[in-house]
Length: 190
Image (cartoon, rainbow, N blue to C red; front, side):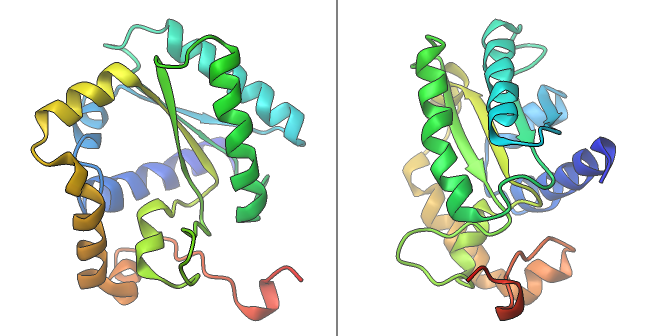
């Protein structure tokens, strides 16, 4: 896929799932203000991918929040296995700390095969973090704090999202044209 195709698919997911289903009540404001930076890593190995993330950590920390408030870093073919991706998240958190931005930036993550602990792969609750591509989301702590302070009962977002997705169901998710990401037995790793 081209970079433009990866960004277009990610924007479609943001519009239909994250904003459209209100899975993140804070996303719409930065999206409509065009304060979301989309970066497609084309690294061919993990070291290159982590270097791309290092650059984006520094970029976001230095950027004017009115211009760029948050960054999504996608990769169309690296880390397709969710467990491998999940292992990399610790390295990304470590990178934020190593760059001296702990308490300034935080990391969220999305993956086509996202699976929370103690859930089955097809559990609809996993879809709160399912995106078209492995995606690292860098957020500004100050922006998150302001958004949470402005949102009554922010701690209930997760439960509300599960309720929304249970009502929607897998068929409803598919009807929105969103990626399902379920592996069939023939596509599973052994």
